[in-house]
Length: 205
Image (cartoon, rainbow, N blue to C red; front, side, top):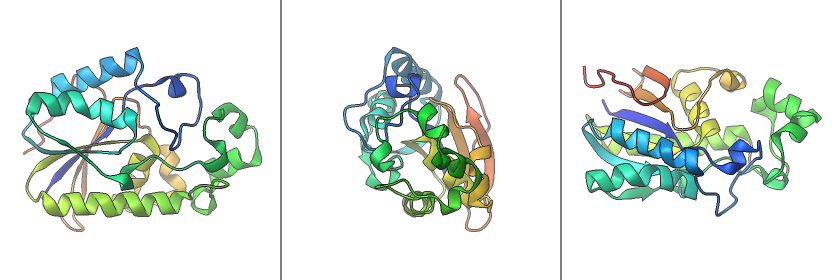
């Protein structure tokens, strides 16, 4: 039964200014984000991690890299872990989006929503779960760290817990946080949600 640490990347200026980054390149961690990556490194280096995976977007890779260097491991990039493609809304403000009908649809009926020129939440959930299932199959009985993004993490947790997609927005995944899932076929356990370092949990019990 593999245990997956689902880790949201650290803060960046797009997050701080309430902008939608989507798949835009060259979005790097800011000072606070680098501090969060170091906090994660100090906490997670104590655990018997056997694999480190990440979205290929810079903010996820930069969050994973300090831990990988300390453990002497490679960050394995998985395009399927990328953030949601928000199409024409890339780089634009969440506040503006939330004042439109699209913003209401995202909150109330995300299962029927697709970003103009981008992805639907259903598509994102499908691709993320496919990658996580593959990682879990390759690491049976092991602990693995997976660095990616807030909505994909929430969508994955909703899937594994059997929750309707329309309720995924009820979950909170903060920058630099760790959510812990133990997968054993249909026997899934959410061991922790949205942990902020430093923390200590009996993962292997």
